[in-house]
Image 1 (spheres, rainbow, N blue to C red):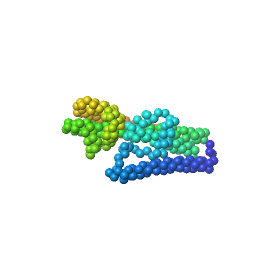
Image 2 (cartoon, rainbow, N blue to C red; image 1 turned 90 degrees about the horizontal axis):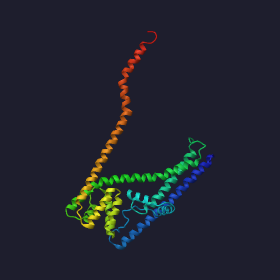
Image 3 (cartoon, rainbow, N blue to C red; image 1 turned 60 degrees about the vertical axis):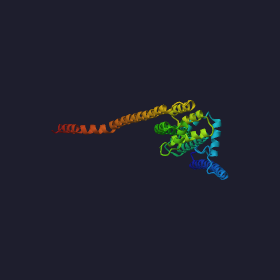
Image 4 (cartoon, rainbow, N blue to C red; image 1 turned 90 degrees about the vertical axis):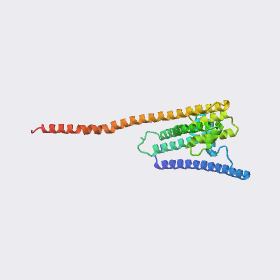
Length: 317
């Protein structure tokens, strides 16, 4: 297929120009939509005259309208997006429109990888001539479709580790301020704005939770959303404990200390597991690299003596 080099070149140029044009159109429409939104916020600020207008989506990720529209069309012909939406929330993207942006990015990555695989099979001489060029497009498209989901899962794991590290300190501080006389509502608001706590991801979730409550959401629902946003099992249990404390007025200090101790034990257990894995890795490295050299050093004198004795006993002696 496409044995003529000139036809190959024209096909490649047409594909590059098409992808570039579509990308520029999407970026232009997205930037235009963001500028319109910023202009509307500026006019609202001038009309109100009381400083910046706080949008309910300030802490969310902006999704350009063109990309979001493409993602909505993709979602309308695909399967249920609840699993992807939950993964995005656990990864730190709380805007409901993020799933559509992710779908669009996934399709474009798949298309780019398909074009790359097609060009690889088309131009690389190492590929056998009997293999059709479209096989490269299929392989590249499949890899490009799977890579964004793999990257998203990796981001979820990294964020869970970060939150687990932050929560131990956060819970200790929260227990201290509640012992000092603050209730759960006051403690959460104080922690959300506390400077120098070194827990940016957890504090971001707390600020969003306080914003939900201020907008009229029920405490139980707001805390349940907080547990989902924090993306770890212990956070969901903590949300249930806090909701029960607010509803019934029970003491929350002992559960908070227990949760903090659990987080610390989990971190210690993770550290021990990592040390065990590294010890195994070091053993493999020593067997592969140090043991042959050691055997060579120990066995070389005997080998030299054996060679000398064989040489001295040869013909002519």
